[in-house]
Image 1 (cartoon, rainbow, N blue to C red):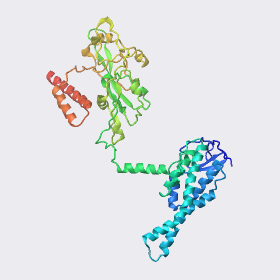
Image 2: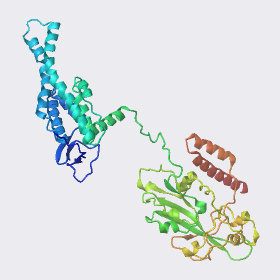
Image 3: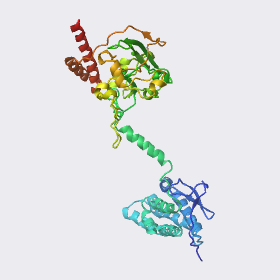
Image 4: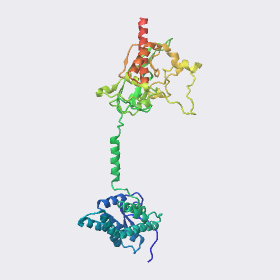
Length: 459
């Protein structure tokens, strides 16, 4: 009889809208209108062992029926294959009867009755071999490289029915690979849980162990008070209204003639971190680079009112702010224009006197800022406020919330006391303080001590 050898490609019928692919779960597939079953090799094998081979006989019948329909070969009779496979169970019947009814059991007698049952193994051997050959023909008809081997199946059958998962795995090359066992993903997850349960914990023991953060971590907002010009820009732009600023005006007499100058002096700068949402708008809008992102993050308190941090604490957080990064290779260097009158740049502008960008003073409602050279002429260094010079404007009535105080002299620049600096630095490092924070605290203490000594000496 002629056999149809045309190539046929299987498709999934459980999920008709999905393209056939390997690695799918067990399920029903169809080829030319005929239904077939995709099974898990390990699941079929374990079920055969649990039922003492009964399911293996049912599986053998189904595989031969699929081979008959897929190959369209009417010479394959699944019923005969089932009967031939089931005869394997009769091979132990003679030995079992001898064990039950013999008056005296002997080794050679038991071996003889086992040999008497060996003829019952001939039909199972033939059907197992032919099943492997049929699966090989099915692979050829599917356009695959034939890898199934009936001899291998015959040799594996005595090893706890190992031919069952072998033949099913070969069939799945046609139907599509399946997981070894339903629920194998759950078993893998449990294994991962067990593995980590028995391993050593990797939890970081904070606060004994400090986390290693990136150098430019955005923790809190710090303040560089000497750069603040009390322009109120950060407070006006804050969407949470969590920045509190207080200041007063000071009037300074000119060195030689002219009009007196008035400048704002910062009295209080506080941020309520119970309200702050860390948007960074204040850092972006500050025209004089007085606010920065600091990597500090350890400022938890027991009360919500203690989250209002004043300028002293904000200035201390500024110690850990890194300097600006280097310019990229090939970038144009930033150079300030030479001051009027040809004065050297170092004489016309000091590091503590930032220059406002064009249009900033006008945008805030005040008159334009004076050029650096003009500011140097109008306000000698010894009469300048200790903080940065704000935009120049004529004396006027104080703004709401401000207070006018009589002018007083600012302390002159002093060199930090070296002995105090070394002592405080050693104390802070001994406490485990970060070196940058320790250096900042030591410098502040050394400057205060130097000013105290200068005041006592002058008195």
